Image 1 (cartoon, rainbow, N blue to C red):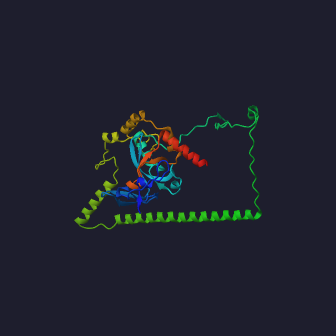
Image 2 (image 1 turned 45 degrees about the vertical axis):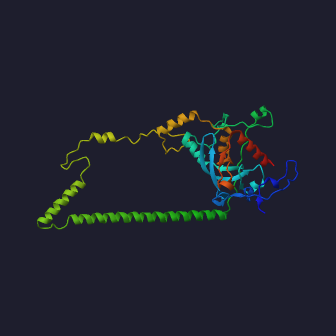
Image 3 (image 1 turned 180 degrees about the vertical axis):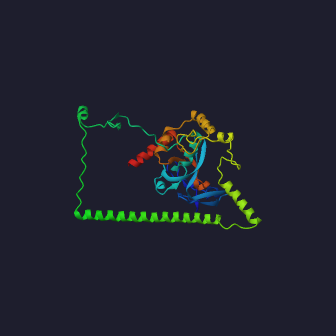
Length: 355
């Protein structure tokens, strides 16, 4: 006896049993549910042969899917982080079972990155609210706090002085220990200084010896013959080129400064002015073409309030609904919740938390 989806094995709308007058048929065949589990970093799908040679992809383990953003008409592949709500059974939420129609929390990074590239606006950033209040004596802002008493009493009340607790006096033993520690530190410093002095002395002595050796080689015995004199002339010419100043020619006359070199040189104090976006870091300049595109797109930009709050307060999570059936397609695809649908499910989740 296999699983059958036939009407014969169900009840009438009144509750009465249906008289079974025939056997089961192949086209009424049913199979056990897939019960696809959300397991991070795992992907397991089995192929099932169906009637007529068709194949169904039965997902047993999934960790992500492709989700669409309806108002912006884009779709991105993201990770599924958690199963949050299921209207049929809470047991499916506890066991993290992925079913068609269940509400899921997904990672918002691909959508946030696309939004910044397209509009130049960084989502998931909370606005910094400035404190409103009068300025104090040191120029710091003072925020008024509500008190139980009257307003006159609060205005006349003087600020209380904060008295710092006195440290207990150290005993004679502790003082001696502190003195010994100081002496040890001084001795270590002196040793380090002596080592550094010795190193510098060695370096200077090595340099002096190298210079003396070079001088001795230069003032060596003169080689007799034409070959020695030619070598000497060649060496002399090289030394003159090496030690010649940069602004002089071979003859020794001063060179005139070229116009090209002056035009290329710029003062080091001048800073290049670059345009940066609000959210981006200062070392990444934004090209003018992209800035113009952002400006034109920003005029028609509309972001739902509930979705904006979800981007900010969700901690990198968005609520989405699974539209595909993972047990038949082998994928958990869906769409991001927006507008009234998002508000409805947020209310449901708030009620669940309060219980």
